[in-house]
Image (cartoon, rainbow, N blue to C red; front, side, top):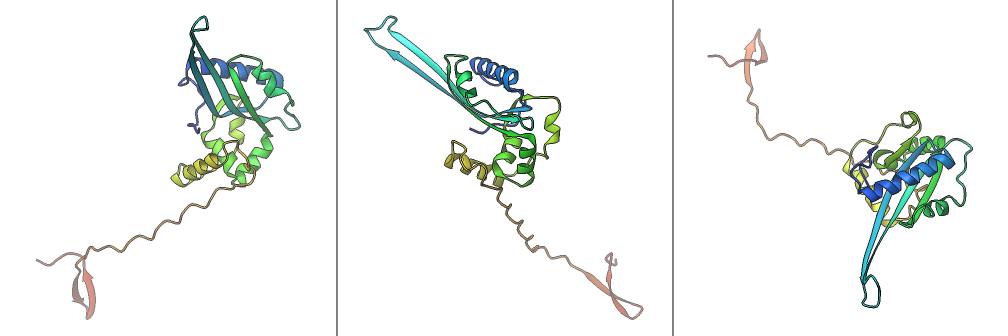
Length: 203
């Protein structure tokens, strides 16, 4: 799912907020990222009843999320980082992590790659070190063509495959302004032997 560009998750449910804060704190402590983007999340809940069980009703709630980490130059993500995060809580079903350097993201945005430009525009910032967001190129202007392309990409690649391949499509050309049907009457006159347009009608 795509979300508005916000630095707050206050509009999330309490359990979501708690898990995201816990994940963020572990990542900051162990990886020292420059930026943590939340790309998307999913909640799976299930209720089950059975007369053989005590209690007869059991409820489960699990949370999954996709994160993009922007790391300092030369910093690598530990291979077991996602598994370590899942161990933080039994409510965590899956955490998908992607990581790139700040310089790489800067270049990808400048080169008009869809994935990084859309994350820059619409990803939720869970963490920012200092004022590092100010080092990124400006966000995309709001335009339905970009939103439609982003949605098509995600529906085709919910695992973010080929995110290093697709560039932003060119915006459609603006249609030529239609000729006006309004007829503007002109008053002509003779001045000094020449035909001229009169600015005001003679009374």
